[in-house]
Length: 86
Image (cartoon, rainbow, N blue to C red; front, side, top):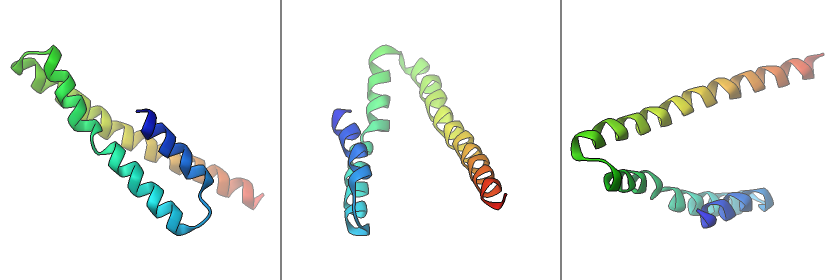
């Protein structure tokens, strides 16, 4: 998680497109283990029948977060365009 945060902060200091691509690739490598890690972590605490439900909740929450985030981005974009036109 520390490496993930450090690479995320590294996005702020990129100077060109090549650096951005490299940093995004590294960020993707650190994020790739998150979902499988959560599934393994949940398997330590719940029985097999309970795991299915808990993992389904986790994946549903991730999908809902993407949907809510896209709505928020569109609202911010609309506000930004409105303020620029005034």
